[in-house]
Image (tube, rainbow, N blue to C red; front, side, top):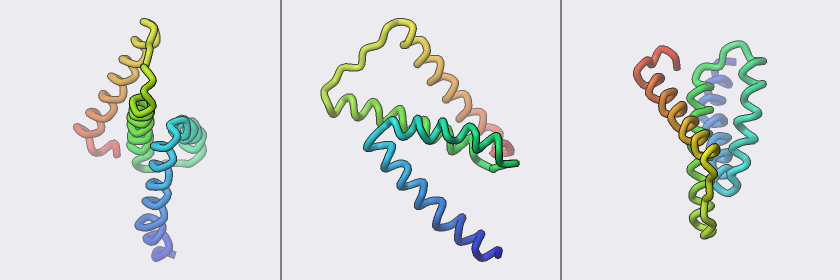
Length: 108
């Protein structure tokens, strides 16, 4: 059974991750779908190491994909002042999580 677990960790999880990133890059709303789906999974499963790191990475890929898709399609990104403040706070919170995990690797 341990061989299957090793195979799962070394092959299946990265392949699923790569497919997920490709989906997010093509259609950024899939990133929101994956992030929303992670919330109940995190609550149901006992302890999944690195799940917060995966969520932060998916969020970063989603935001980058959204911006890139908007630039490629020549659509201007328009923000009202309230949504701009929300995006700035969300970006700062994401940076705080990444820096916090980088400074304290025991949380991974």
